[in-house]
Every structure is written in C-alpha cells, then in structure tokens.
Figure 1 (cartoon, rainbow, N blue to C red):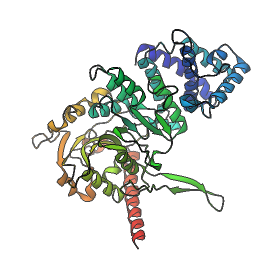
Figure 2: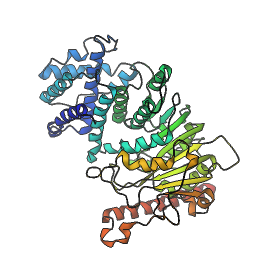
Figure 3: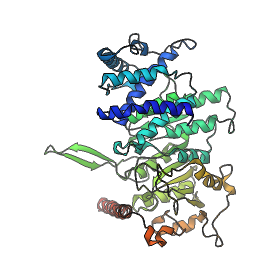
Amino acid sequence: MSEQSSNIVSKVWGLCNPLRDDGVSYGDYLEQLTYLIFLKMSDEYSRPPYKRETGIPKGYTWSDMNTLKGAELENQYRAILERLGDEGGILGQIFKGAVNKISNVSILYRVVQMIDKENWVSMSSDVKGEIYEGLLQKNAEDVKSGAGQYFTPRPLIKAMVACLRPEPKKTIADPCCGSGGFFLAAQAFLADPKNYALDRTEKEFLKNETFYGTELVVATFKLCLMNLYLHNIGDLYGKVPVIRGDALLSDPGYRVDYVLTNPPFGKKSSITFTNEEEEQEEEDLVYNRQDFWTTSSNKQLNFIQHINTILKPTGKAAVVVPDNILFEGGAGEIIRKKLLDTTDLHTILRLPTGIFYKPGVKANVIFFDKRPASPERQTKEVWIYDFRTNVHFTLRQHPMTDADLQDFIQCYHPENRHERTETWSQENPEGRWRRFTVDEILERDKTSLDIFWLKDKSLADLDNLPAPDELAADIIENLQSALESFQELMGQLKKND
C-alpha cells in the first residue's frame, strides 16, 4: 500500500474506536464512509475541469452538507440519504434503504471534515482502490462481525487471475462477488502494460462490458458497487455490473468466458419460516434447476453446477472450494464425475490453513475448462499442487504474500499449461506438484479428489500436533459430511420407492 493510501486509511480508521464506543460496528462505519465518499466524489466531478452532470438533485449535494454542524448536519445528511435512495442507476442502488448510523453528531462532523480535506477524484484509481481495499480488509479482520466471509486473500485472487490469464474483450463473472476482489484483480491484470496494450475500444469494454456479478448480502452489495466505481468499473448511469440476489435461484441467461469466484463458506442453503405454532424453523433449501446435474442442499455443490451453466462452451473457471467438495459422497460424487466427463478439470491447488478469516477452513482451488458436448471424457489428467502439507500462515504474524504463490504459478505454466513438468518423483518424494491420470482418480473410492502424498511433519512430532480445537473441528466436519451423504442417499432411496 502506498504511503498516501496508508495515511488516509489510518486517518479514516482512527475514528473507529470512538464510533465503536457509540455502538457503531466496523461494517456500519464502512457503509457510512461509502455514502460520504461517494457524495464527495460526485461533488468534485460536478466542478471544473470535469463539470459532469452527476444526477444528484440540487439541495442534496455534498456542498449542501459539508459546512454544517450539529443537528443541522445530522438532519441534512438524513435527508440526502432518503432522497438519493429513490434515484435510479448505481446511485439508487448504493443509497437504497440508507440510514444514518452515526448518531454522535460531533463524530459525524469529524468524519465529514476528514473526507472534505481530501481530493478523491484527483487520486489515481490505484490509490483510491488501495484506500477502500484497506478499509475492507480492516472490516474483514473484525472476526466478530463475520465480514471476513466475503474477503478472499488478495494474493490468492491475484494468483488465480494470473493462472487463468483473462484476455481483452472477454467476459468475466463472479456469482457471489462479495466486495469485488476478483473483478479488481482481473482489471489490474488486463490493464497492466506488461500483459496487454489495450486500445480505446478494449478499455471501454473493460470498463462497461467485462464484468457480471451477483451478491446476496445488501451491505456487501453496496460495498462492491462503491469499490468498482472507485476503480473505474461501470458507469454512474449505465448498466450496473453487479446485481443483488441469490445467484442459485435461476439461470441468469448470460454466458461468460471466465468465472473467478469463492462461494460463501457454510455447506447448507436454508430458508427460515414460521410454522403453525408461530415458531421460527429452518428448512434446507434445495434448488430444483433443469440445468443442474443433481439436486443438493450443499451450497458449494450448487455453485459448481451454476458455474458450469454460465460458462460458454469454451469457458474457463477457477473456484475456491472446501475440502468436502473433493471427497463427499452422494451428490458430491455425481458432480465430480460430471466435471471429469464434461470439462477438463486439469488442476487442483490445495490451500494452506491460516489464510482465511474464518479459522480452521481447509480449502482448495479447482481449475476447469468447459468443453463442447462430446461422448469422450474431457479430463485426461489432473495436476495437484500441495501447498498445504507443512505450510501454515497466520493473518497477522505470518500472512501469505504474492511471493508465496509464485512457485505454484510457475508450475501451472499459464502460457501453455500443456508443457508442465512434475516436481514430484520417486527420487524427489517431497515435490509438491504431481500428475494423476483420470483412470487413477476414477479407481478411488467415491472418485475422491482429496489426494495428498507428502508426509506431514507435525504428525511425526507428537509435541507438534494441531491444537485440540482444530482436531475436533476436523473430526466434526468429517462426521457431518458422512451424515449428510447418508441423508442424501436415504432421500434418493425414498424417492425411488
């Protein structure tokens, strides 16, 4: 992060402690900053040399608020939020349902003055983006808020983009886009002169036509829109690149060249309803879609099927999935076999622990290329990079960096992945990069892709065993997966009776 960005992030975040004392969460503060920074930038665009028509009605602009204090400031800010929520385009999407959550007027005044001192438009999109991403990361670090669930480690996102190597004038989707991290990394890759020299039409396409996103959570959806706008993705009054809703409900109709995504953690989709006794109950949500290979209440399995639908016949995907997707029976086994048959599921990256804000998460990235319909099995071999065994990071003391994933990117060989070389061999059993034929995988129990071969040094040293809560979490997850597979099997048997 640049020094300018870091200074502003420190200033903006410096006001958080008094706000917390006042009952304002990190997420609520970030939401209020979204509204205020947007208003300030719109005001800057309305002045020379830009003189843009911002669409913000007279009497409801930044300059109608920034000189006020006390109750006058609070009342004007509330009036602005209410009015702009009724507007169209990105403007209305960002301000829809907006309310002032900074009830302490002296702190509201300090926040307004702090934002007023900066010239946001004149900052490069890199600097603005760094500031906002810095705030998103701070928010994600607040484990209690659960905000980390939509924050994928940026080094991992960049590595996934580097492997897929998106090309100009091609489309990219993220059906659960969170704060937009995959879009920003893809934009940075495409706009980097070391990768491409974009002409004017390619730049326009990148800004307005490249990205398709869906986000379920309202607050996260707003953060994403603001994040994209600050990075020059989408137009204030043009097509909104991200829609709010449940991506799994239906086929959206569009088809894209690439999907980059990290579906939300938590295996089950559910809906809450009130029963006849007026009690709240939860029921597993199963999506019955004609385009899906099988029905399941497992969110990640449904997202994989959804991704397969929205990819063009030659589309490519990189998807973060938890371990259970690689070994679970029932619907999991059906979907793995379908992926091996109808796509080229060519690469799996086994991720280390300690990189996500939700503790104990064991995840992987699966890379697959969709193929036009064919009677032949499309996957011939699966390459696995074990970046988990004997590797561990922590979010603060030892975070994962871009450099840590360089070896995987080199092994992946994005320039031509058909020219790969194993680093594992009988002579080098510690090699992390190994090839398996599809026949070897099909012979495994339940067509399991949960494959590892390196010796775990911590297990050889009894004094260095994982913490008891980690071991317990592993046991519970395995038992839950087994139970869910059994329940799915029993459900299928009942249907067939």
